[in-house]
Length: 367
Image (cartoon, rainbow, N blue to C red):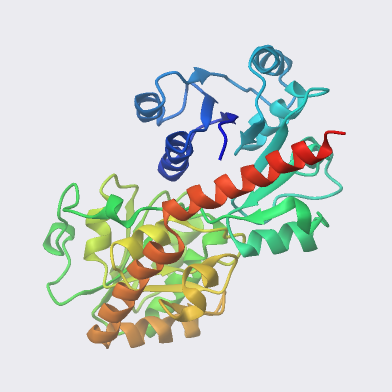
């Protein structure tokens, strides 16, 4: 593949995004990176891309940011501009007005878009967007069916991980005794921001159907006070539901879980917490929402249940808790799923192929 210039404009970049940009650079792509100086991952990004530049985007109509970016684009024309966030995408579209270059967006979730919302036409519905990289087939279906975007503009590229990122000992081993739990406790765990779409209320309601040795650990931001009230209203199991808050030791918490549960009810693209659990060989129970069936290979490397169904969720969790051998098999299968279908090397290869197709389109358009 010939060398070409890729301009990336982002708010921040998580580990998989940084890794795939490193992979593109290693393949010969000239990567120019702009991102928000307030990014919590600023130090890591600058370590890997020391020439990265800062761009603060206050809102989608930030004229100052658009002018700053346009000056750079005029001096260093990119063949492709990639914007993985809403505000930088809107600014990029303004900055490239009347200038050549393909604009590629990224969509990692379902929902929150409408053809009747003018703001959507500043980003994903803008006709200048050449392609939208969708994190799962579910996101492709949503944009095509609900937003009526043409299939030709949509491409599914999984945001890959490298399972070895999650190997080795955790930051700190966590034991049942550390959390004041009995030694015979069976641990059902959830990790994530406990927003309503995550379905944590369904998981709490499932607890009174599980055996008395089952304890539920909820790790992450729990901003909804209704969840704590709901847990307290479960007299048979309220003492076995534990809100642990955010943790910087996610791997240590995952190692403690007998079963990891993602009971989402809407909008899941490809949840990172589930990928981390699979990489750590934890058996997963998840709802059939968004990209979760793709991630669990339609139930071949995890257990899928209908959303908003506490009885079905409890039945699946209970079966896993009763069968240690099955849990081990699912853990192995889940790790293999990430290694073979959701690996960062595939993200890099498929992104290079996408870019090549755009460059070919440019050549074919020349009279």
